[in-house]
Length: 253
Image 1 (tube, rainbow, N blue to C red):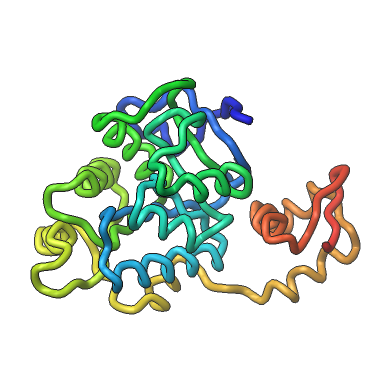
Image 2: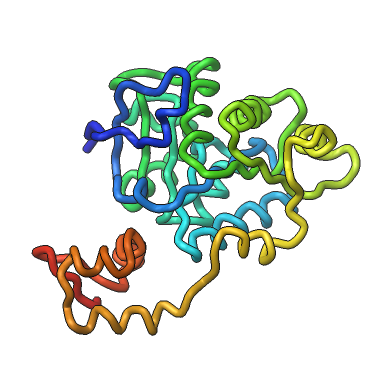
């Protein structure tokens, strides 16, 4: 079922033209977590495929939700790697699954993760809509990761938006003649290079001993007590099935 998101995420207020309405399907609690944006080419090479999945999964493990655009290629890989801690921003209304190749993925995200759109029902994607969509993908994340991009591509427009918004950009190392877009960003000093995934992820957080922390919930604290102790991390654990929230009380699953 499609619903209207209210209130709109504060991160979008930095946009010159923020959306006036956002429709959603899925779990809006994901917007309360730390967010990272991952985008890139629709035709990634094998190295990019593996690294995109690895990076997305690593961010999910440290409590981040991965934001992307549900396109084929890098976007789909980022969503798959982070599932269910992932958000897709669509360039069409939510009653339309596009691209068709990602229909199953989008359907799964609408139930287990979160899918967003600023478009009313029966609105099909246009070339311009993808550019408009990109501003939301970039604005939601605290940083933008581009795992591969051609020099003249929509992904590079996302990089321009990130620069305008002051969001840091991170890219992978590629061989000569590959991913000319990200190589240009590096050459011009607009992006930082990811050389080691573990070291890179460590800049954002670390995997904590969840088992020890979950001992807190043996006493069945109230939701307000749990939020005071661990903040939005409890929603992450709820998504992972480690705890359940019922009648404003938190229990171990």
